[in-house]
Length: 342
Image 1 (cartoon, rainbow, N blue to C red):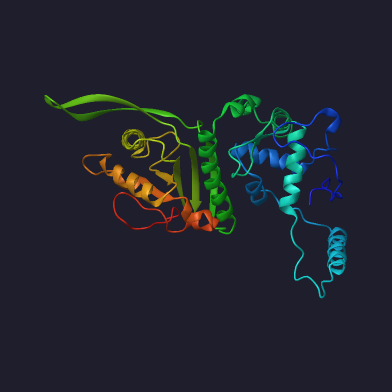
Image 2 (cartoon, one colour):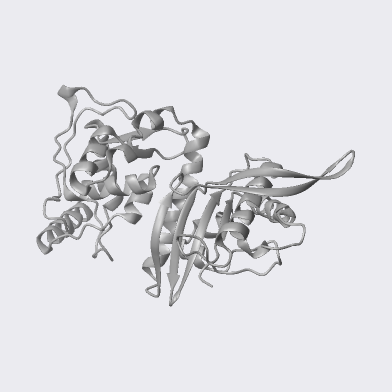
């Protein structure tokens, strides 16, 4: 348990606005804790995140024996008042309510932002100006790298949904790796951190016959990370597809990856030491996954590089995080289902 984390009694106050910060005279009492700083750091790592995701990723608060005893006595008193006999099988966790309470205080004091998607979606949280300042002071993070406040306010629902899709994958991967000591996430770089240009020649059909043209492409993944499993390490690029991109545009994106592999990575010539990599594509539906998997078969006329591209529907692991490491991934080469750990 963090030393300055305390259990506070519920105080009934005037209801605070959800998407407008409280005025100075209505601000709730607040003291920034080490646990708050941990929440801010997770927001920095993920950029867009929900309270439920934070609850899964943050270090659990462990009650002292005295606090645990107080909670048990409070529950026993409430059960007695309701006429419930016997003892409770377990003490219910208040972790979600505690996270939401801290997020409310962090929002109204300017440390985080609240972003609304729709009336049916959970609130999305992102760093605010004070939160960014605190990360710079406490963790030494370059302030220029987290100057997102105005960008987040101007961000539309489509972009936030895309960012959340990436965050959900990273959350599932993080939770799955906690239960697998033989595998390690070596690093994770967010969208925009990795960028490289590629130039290649491509034959196209015209009215006058086949013509070769010079094509310029760029590789900018939604995420870039490396997994170590046993003695083997794999470099992986992530693409989150929300069915907003045409097949032709997506094929151009995959061709850029293929020619990056063929000209800069193959043979171990890349500065990072990559000898190969995989491109994981997440989709919202199995139908879209199959559509893109078929599209990927046209990346190279000779059929090379098909094992670079792995596809899965995010529904395959939304219910159970550990399934993100299960054999749910398929390539354009065949219908075999694989794990990204192999």
